[in-house]
Length: 121
Image 1: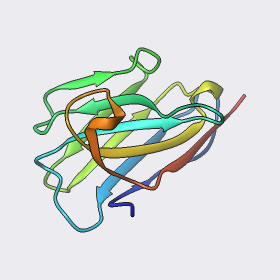
Image 2 (image 1 turned 180 degrees about the horizontal axis):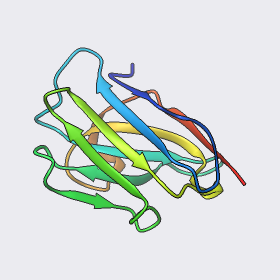
Image 3 (image 1 turned 180 degrees about the vertical axis):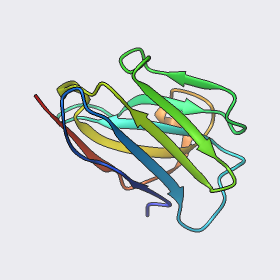
Image 4 (image 1 turned 120 degrees about the horizontal axis):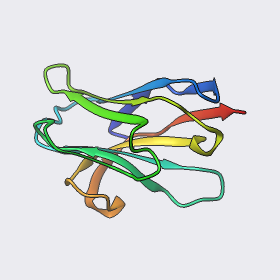
């Protein structure tokens, strides 16, 4: 059962931008690091970015560094992923997750249901 709710996905042309949002359905996430992962067609789920509990620390996958920005607003109980310079290789279902400040998918206890991002060439 998904405990996080993502929004903001959609269809965009190459070079365009999208902003994803994620919020817990019934709890506050301030004590968790928050991560974004993605899973493309026929691929394994891969790390995209993570942000520390206080928002000071961030880590990005090399493939998105310089194009994507993760942020969080603990007062609004929401984490964001701003995606700029999108290309077709970014097409995937994007998931947010709450857990430890790592790249490892197994270190996250709570997941959203995912939101589809499709980038056309």
